Image (cartoon, rainbow, N blue to C red; front, top):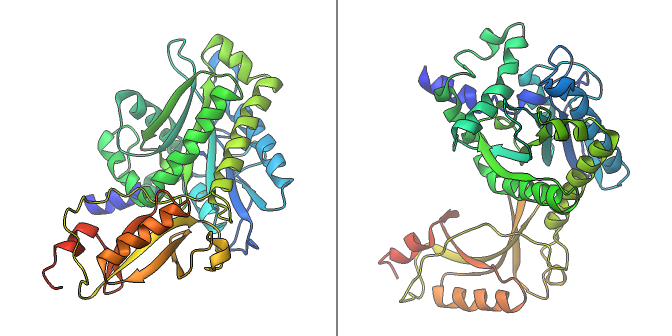
Length: 370
């Protein structure tokens, strides 16, 4: 039973803030970058009502402004969880994003507190729940109680119990780094563009994020319970500033994934083991140099990779990973790594594969079979 609950929880987070009357079926995205925008709460769920303001209305206005701007770009496709004041069940919200085969999920909310706390926060899925983060997760997850069959649909899940939140992070594990990248861009824009106070990036067990198969963030644009911030967020000018910051972050995030001839590439954060003595040929092991990862499927040709030849491409999850070279000799692999770095791929690193599966570099070099 505990295993069942654990898996169930992992599927619960993204559904939290989705609301929509749309029915989205599996569809072709025609190569476009798909962004799912989620206005928190809706319908019978108003969200928080700090200073008499309505979270559901403010979140929707911000989302619609972001979406309208993205829709004007030919390489984007926008899916809304809701475009009107309606309530959608949590589990359906997650399904909307997954059926859309989205590249990004952004959920917009407004915060509340018993004090005059202020500032923006952007959450990614995680189990590092401080007391404050748990309170946020509890508040956002409690929306399931508004659903007619919540005991049946979320059997064993209790938003009020910390132990019910532990499993939520597992299914998003592959996307946490990318989610943090987007969260950082959003918070930086809130500071630089909107001149807002930022409380930083947080990790919490939010149901609305946990079952999405894509990088996902939940953005708290400020505290309605703060007198000045609530007034700002309830104004057209304030909503427009927050929408612009989110929009610029999404654009910057996509640009970082658009791997072209330039330097817009990302690499997996890998800590390479320090090896004092390099072995030569290692049986059943192949070394490649990972130089980039991108959401874009580039032709593995030299002209796309600064003149580097012998490029290979593999799809892992939603990303394409690009490798330079192919050798069983670790000494040669080190030389290839240097070549890649000299070409501008300063974060290039050596990847070891055994029988076609990636293994730790240290594990590959420990073998006695040379």
